[in-house]
Image (cartoon, rainbow, N blue to C red):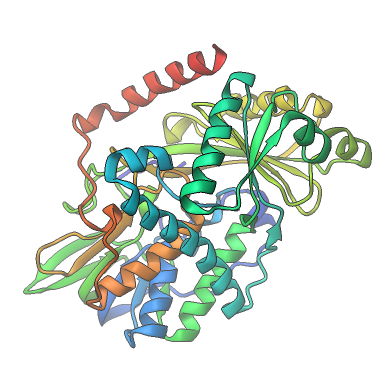
Length: 444
């Protein structure tokens, strides 16, 4: 599997992984870049961030960008994630944000998160995107009784400070009405969150961008990037683009050494997913899982799952350390074991799909949407920390605004670049230690 930290090339025209999402999708016919082109804005990366940015530039700012995707549109995390449309990005709680930046800033961040969810709904409606949008809400589940108090405190904070409609659900209601889990002792229900088919959403964004006037090119990895005066020459295998401005929107799939503005500023971490065979009626009744519901637990190394429209269970969590190990059966079995520990009613169920994807983690646990150079010609958005479906859609809008010369909200995301990782070459050794600590903590 492609590994951003060890490979020197992201691939060219690679097929989608053998995932549940790709199995039901006909790829959009998109050409490779041919010959030399000029453009006001080049966007590197054909996922949610790049495609939503391209759409905004073309539809709202009269700028017709060129999008360069190394493989296929939505090939990266945008086509591999679990399809959870949730609040936020990064790994900071709202209480941590209040301590770090104060109440007013935290309020602004909350509004930006909610705008991200609304943005996904707006784009789905605008493009009439058939991406299996599934209401049902998001459950954050206490996997141990001692964590229930923390969830109650979080619900109180969200209700009082942010007027969020989150609701605390006790063990009895949780087991009766939502899920009959062995590791479910209480939960927070965020009713406005919803599920989608992530690859269909990405291709819907692509169609919106193309109709608005953006030029889309697959099988066009950027192999060389040179300055020509104040402009940028991006060279692909079969062509080049001379651009006034460049947007880097490759997030977790960005090469370790790609451009000085982003090198060593994020850490790609694997998340792996299994999808089971369809549950029969007896299994559905035994699990009691509510249709459309999306679930994540409170572990240090979190598991997440949802009931898909065809009654399969999607279940995900942390995967291998390096890309070369991503498809090892050990990680498939580890996820299946974790699923059956939480839902023992599914013991013996078969797995039909298993795949992995890269999540972009930032050093200080929150993402950036920023201008990367003093001249205002390079921009990027990265570091979503695994919660990027809604945030990436909103980030594309904010990137387009910045490229067009508009001001960004006065929020930390927009006010500094991603910090570099110290001792960057040892990141994976640190991740190995974190995983062992996390498993020990969760075991305790």
